[in-house]
Length: 349
Image 1 (cartoon, rainbow, N blue to C red):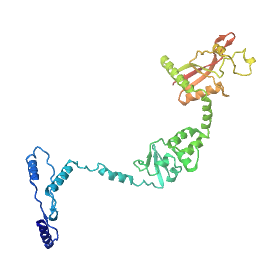
Image 2: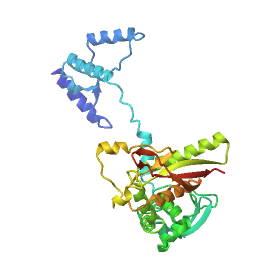
Image 3: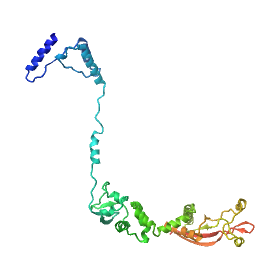
Image 4: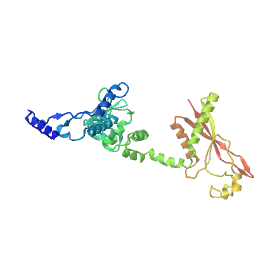
């Protein structure tokens, strides 16, 4: 009854207040709680100071037991004390720049583009560079990538500009380069990934002839290795003799079995079927530095010699060759090795 009276009086006082707010009163702390607080105050130098929750209760809420109210508040305070403070997200500062970078508008280009390709200047339209979508130039000038500029404001491409005019002429009108520049332009078209230009160049000379020649050389998987042997042996001999050139003996033969003057009139084919035991009697290695053969194709020995000299010349090595005879090694009975032997002269300077 006393509590109800106090509630009523407080309610009447609250209604008379200027702000119309309900008056609050402090509920007395029980003795056990006071003792606990004193113990924490005395031991505050050695124990971590917990956070103390002060509970303000309205007069109408005092009908609840004080011990139960403080025990629940103490347990809530202890739980809050045990919980670690939640740190701020680490990406809070970097989130805004990331969002701004994602929303960065694409780079815009003028209709007329000035280019600096390895120090050579060009001027073309933007639509020309974007003629084919799946090319490197179209990707560069799509606005999604950064392109540096030189001191004059030209867009810079770090590439040799010697054959870039042929690239532009194809993008403008589909014009193909002269035969002398086909190989070089083909390399540039590979760099810029211009598929239509690559297809057009591979259907012209000398690239078409190169395909046919390579089909012949594929019959000899050891061809490239033999070229390396020729270069290494010639270089070693020239350095040992301190000479300007070096000579090598190279055997080039097309037939698998050796041919003798006695056999040829008896057979119409250059291939002879022999048993394994007979074939071993004809197996031997000619006393030469490098040996090419045999192979099965229409191309003959002189075609292979032309390939060897041409590929060495492509590497800047001057080579001359001439036939100096045959192996003429006696095998069995009247059979002799008739594989031709060629002398290669490699000039180094």
